[in-house]
Amino acid sequence: MNTILIVDDEYLIADILGFALEDEGFLVVKASNGLKALEALKEKEKRVQLVITDFMMPLLDGKELVRSMREDPDLSNLPVILMSGAQANQGDPELFAAVFDKPFDMDGMIAKVRELLGT
Image (cartoon, rainbow, N blue to C red):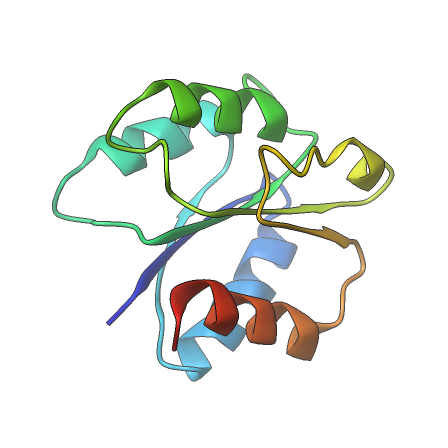
């Protein structure tokens, strides 16, 4: 079973996306900011295969999170999807596997997750 980390300080969005992905058979882990996401990614028992992150968050935003991941050899190849309201245009294709504007189409998000995970 593939594990997906959802990083968003808006709990409602994280919960709705999490429930949709769980309904599709994925295991979901959540973090409310980039620092907590890095902590979760370093926990070996979670073995996250994909990250979906918001852009604007306290402590460490989505772009800073991905840059930190790319500097870590264990996390450098982990695919990351950016979901954002006004900042989606900052979704650097070198950092993110895909970019979704909020509000996003849930079917489109699930299809992209399946594509990136090869499921």
